[in-house]
Amino acid sequence: MRTLEHPTTDEITMDAVLAALADPMRRRIVRQLLDGGATQTCSQFALPVSKSTQTYHFRVLREAGIISQHYQGTSIINQLRLADLDERMPGLLDAVMTAG
Image (cartoon, rainbow, N blue to C red; front, side, top):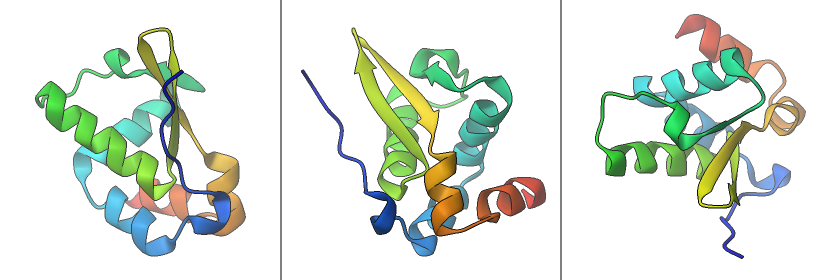
């Protein structure tokens, strides 16, 4: 089974999170996950970018520790790591998403 690398909770850094959320397309992905339910497949996002660019944005969010991804059949399931982010940086995601 294919797996994707994720940082542990202790490896999530403010610099990585803020850098990932600096991009409006990645904030759009996070907003959709916040508003649209706990988990969503990549195909549920109608982003105005190419498939490869979309994949890149999801990878940046995963490597920053903002989302987790796992395979379910041939689909990739995306989920926000809210508990991990709140443990490391309480209120940061809410503040960024409110401001952005």
